[in-house]
Image 1 (spheres, one colour):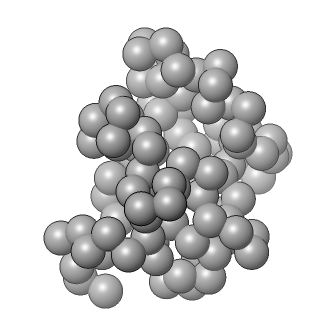
Image 2: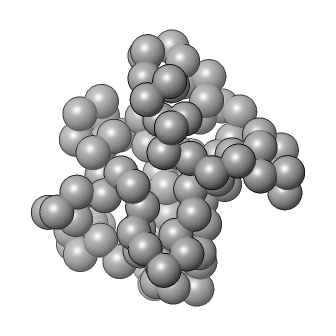
Length: 93
């Protein structure tokens, strides 16, 4: 259950500081035509399979709006969010 607190998308919440982007996320974003815009907000890395992360180092996710909602979810639907974000079990923490 989402309480719209935004804590799951902020640095150091639940002891995480990054969101690893998977190839399936990238393919989905390409299909709906938003990959070029999303790629601009991602950091490149050689530490994961896809080569992209969302860094939460001392800041919030770039897709978190002022109302603590994911703009990807709000604009494109639940399945536009990265897989790890969809799988996050906020109510179980």
